[in-house]
Every structure is written in C-alpha cells, then in structure tokens.
Length: 314
Image (cartoon, rainbow, N blue to C red):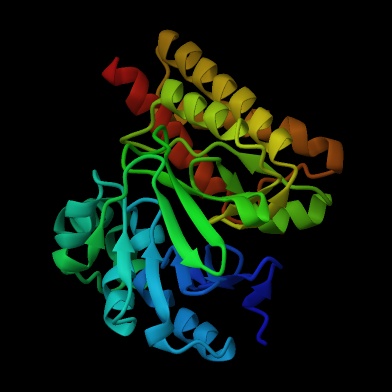
C-alpha cells in the first residue's frame, strides 16, 4: 500500500490527495463496511489519488455507495462532480444549505477565482456539477446505515460555515470533522510531538457563537478520535475541543481589540502571529519561515480575514 493510503483501524483508511500539489494538506477517508463510504473528495486535481486508493484496497467503483462532503468549500468538495461520475452507484450527501452549490458550482468557482486568481486552475482544476437526482440532504441527527452493523450519524455543525456537517462514527468513537473542529497542522504536530490545532475562522460564514456551540455539542458525544480533513487523525478529542473553544475566544477578542483601536485585518493577522509564535517559542521555533510551519501563514491570513469580516458586519 502506498504512503498516501493509511490504515487507521476500524476499517478506516485515510487518503492524502496532495491538495495544492503537496502532501499533508488534505485527507479524505474511506470506510469499508457492508457498503463503502467516501468522506470528502478534496479538490478535483486530487481525485486520481482516490481512484488509486480504491484500487489498492481492492474496492470496485460499484462498491462505493456513499460520497459524503462535510461542506461545499472546494478543498473539501471540489472533486464531488468528478467522483460522482467515477462511482456510478454512489449517492452524494451534503448539508441542505450546500446542495445547490453542488448542483451548480458556478458561484463557488467565481468566489474561489476572486481569492486565488491565477492559482485557481492549479489548485482546483475543473469543478463539475453533481446531478440533482444523486444528491441526498440528510436531516440533523439522521443515521446512515453502512451495513455490517456500522452506521454514521449526521450532525449539523455551523460556525465555520452554515452548510457544514460532521459525521459521528460510534464504531471508532470518532468524528469526521471537516473544518468544524479546526485545522490540525501535520508537519508541525510531528515536529512538536503532539497535535497542534487552531480554529478555522475564514470569511464569509464564520460566526464565533455558532462555532463554540458546535464544539460544545460535539464534546457531549463521548468521542476519543477526530479525523481532520486538514489533516489526519488526532487522539484526545476532549483536549482538542477545549483548546478550540479557548482559542476561538482569544481570536475574537484580538479582533475586537484591534478594530476598536482603528486597526485593519492585516493588524489582526499580525496579532494572531504573535500569539502563535509565543506558544511555539517554547519549542525553539522563532522563525515564521520554519519548514514545520507550512500552511500556517495561509490559515492565519484566512482566520484574520474571517474575524474582521464577522466583526465589521456587526
């Protein structure tokens, strides 16, 4: 089995789809039970890694009955249209508020092009629609029976995005969290020897009260494992959730203080960097260009923009 397919036990396999052409950025997950489920598709350029993973696992396209996306941001669901064509027996599950964007992704594409400009094609490729008859929009709390005694529970999880859901998997005592429980920085976590996680607070949907409410709701599930889309598995869900709640409050407070003093989103970004670097200095990381900080600059910039957007709307 190749290095980009990792057996996580409980018949769960993580697949690195080399988002933006690099490893350690985006995980998709395959669950093998009586039927096969794919959780997240990643962006379109990574779908070949998914089809290769199915071949390595001895799974035919017809065995995959479920494609589930936690939300419709293109780094999570941009490949849904292509994968739906490759997996002809699969239904595509999405939050009701995200369904229209899978059926017609033009607004998502236009928004992403405005942000990424000339990098869009390389990052996201062709974004194909999903035919409406293939789409399912589960209710909050609905159960998906995978067969062989395995099921997943859909939980609405607003805060990061209003069209976000997470998947509770009682069999693994885990959740597939999308971005609702923040971002796990893989390279930095390996360097530190423990999971390093920050909230994910991008524009335009971030709402701190809903974000914290979602975290508290998930904390009541009695889970141990978190399967992050960005990136990989973390053990010790209680500590992860507590940190997210704390840091979300810190981020919002920083934004309020900066904007009240006449600052800009750029100033919020600098303040967030200071908070992170104070924590990392304990591990002798003093340079923002340290190789273990890959992806951190991008996330901090997005987080600062999201906090500023939310506060200015208020």
